[in-house]
Length: 322
Ligand code: F6P
Image (cartoon, rainbow, N blue to C red; front, side, top):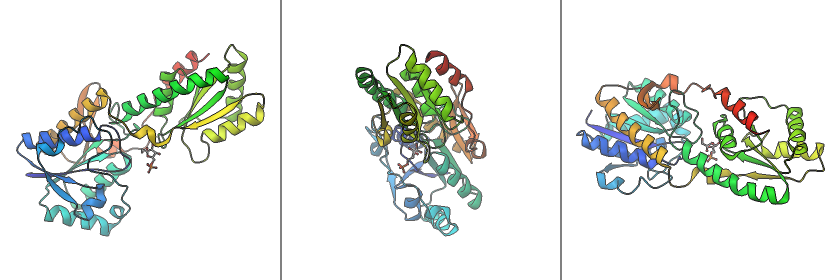
């Protein structure tokens, strides 16, 4: 391998820039040429490629978002799109790809690697933390801290007005952000996709919570097209008209901002790991950190859809929210 291409794909995540920096610098340090590919797989299809020097990644470790831009490419999912992407690799003399992204992006990476027998390694870049084989993903910790800061602020006004707040957080199909931010914020409950939340159960909880000394209440709700924060707020309003209920959907502010120390270090370690993996002849693996060790996780394992949420976390929240 002489030249690697690097791209970011899917939803951006704080720490992606730190990962781009690490892959670029480690690549150059190990004698490789590095090419930045803009706008994810779309940019690979359209040949939006630029040679990177160490200066191209100067000063970016502190910045949220991704300097390479990102996209959710529909075209790359078609055989024609993939073929064009492969042709760009040939034209640009790219011998291996480093893909930074979440579940969908690494699925695309695996398909491309298999279809063209092409060396690809991935870095777990997503706020959702839904990739198997790594303790956390790049961006997750920063987003958790952002949520915590927002909820702390909402708590002030919830207390003052003695209101119940349903606060909706991102996470797609995974409840990591909701469950852990609920613990970190001292919320009264979390509603997550991993647990079927029966509305009666929620209502009973509300009754119990409010009947006790608590006059205000925070419930963190995982986003969901049908049963998001608005849905639960409506149900509670109907059943308990005496309560003053409000909803706050945090939205995309969760994805922005300067990455935390944890995410910068995770991005740096996995970025260096990506180059090491390629130099060792590894392919089709995601670089993760598990038990404080850098690990190479086969794509097929990393992208399995059931990364389990530690059930002990549910008990922690339940016990502490009495
Ligand atoms: O995968 C990251 C994520 O932020 C999810 O948590 C969320 O469901 C989705 O992306 C939002 O995507 P978009 O920015 O395209 O609306």
